[in-house]
Length: 218
Image 1 (cartoon, rainbow, N blue to C red):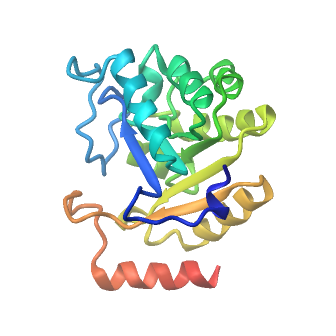
Image 2: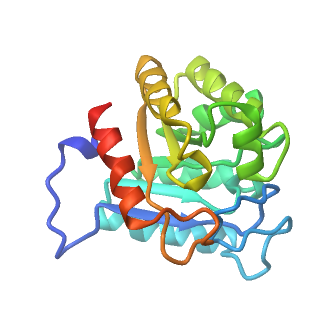
């Protein structure tokens, strides 16, 4: 099922379902609205509850299903859930955190499990900016490695890049990311910062519109 070729009747089902599978995450992102924490929340859905949720999504025939968090790799049953979704006919995308948990072996296991797309966040044109925004030294390098490993495994890549105050002076970065991602066969999505995100990183309406004008030119 190719989500780009599907006509959706939104009175019957959504186009996309996003499941935040865990609050657990080793990053400390400036813009996080998931209240991520190092340890998983005991109230998270169990493996069997997750499978029942996936079965419901399969019955709705939702074109895009995303596993996110927190960091979904924190869940030891992640691969089992992806396999279950694949067998149920659900196309799964994943947004992991770029930490030491995201290894080459993990990415290849994701491919073997049936992952359809890997979404990676890249929030700076160099290490200092990205790592400061994500709250972890080494996150930039792991992000670049993950893109390389996903290409190696044959997993389509989607790059997420946050539009915020921390990058208002990094205009060239936007074009570089989009061009580089296109060469890798991926896509780029950019986020507007939501109102509930910290004022320290949130763009004003005027600055936000200016940035989107720049993106359209790229």
